[in-house]
Length: 410
Image: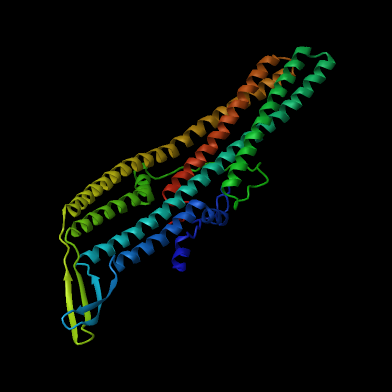
């Protein structure tokens, strides 16, 4: 049992080298293994194994029947002590034991799929909160750079005003823009710290890097067709596998309840002593319950519950297919959106460079430079966020297709 759980508790190994913008695989393995959702699902396997043993053993047990009485013969005025011992047990009819065994097996199968689903959902949560922290950290980093740039600009404006080459209004405008950027930086740092706290509370086994200034790798192209990715996601979807196993269990349960319409007989033997041992009794008894309407109603309920499970499977299949389609589409579209926003940001930054050069030479308006710089800041922030969203969408696709971390339950 322990060896099975070790195998089930996911040797989370990365197929290739660890991506530089993800936590180390060893820390991910430790974090997911310790997550309450995964621990509960692993314990569920033990529950189903015990339930399988119970079903295979059957609901019936041996019963010991003891009786003692005293008989009095009034004509001769003699009392006799009499005793009886009986042993009996209800016997499962042929076919019921096989269905009980099948129910136990499908229960374990369902619990294993539940463990895989718990792993998958925990990994999704980890990935989402990791990139939430990275986005906030990237925004704080961008605003810190802008504050440095605006601080240098403000110093230049101050020198020009002191030399009489610029109006005092330009210094006021420059200071206002710097103060606004500093406020944005403080807000971004607060959001980054909150995201870091939430991540650490959910996954304390993963240490957030102290240096958040590392460049984010560019998201790679997905490559294969959308249909291929959808098939991979559906093949490895644990929620769909759980729904299918639940439908199979419903069918087996309906068959079991239908078989229960014929009650199990009780067979017993008894040994008795009467008239103080003058008479010895050895007997066999058979008890056959007479089926009533309650058993037929239970069988009908089992069929209805099987239909409910089948309908739920169809509903889950439709939802999983739609979700797989969205995941594949998002992975493709976010990369194109990032590339377009990156191109816009580069153009805006080049525009700022030219306007600043013209302003320094006394040929441009400071208000135009300020407006262009604001637009460049917004464009750079949008491109940075789009890059991270594209990376997250790609990793989410790989995770759903079981190509990011190995989380198979077998």
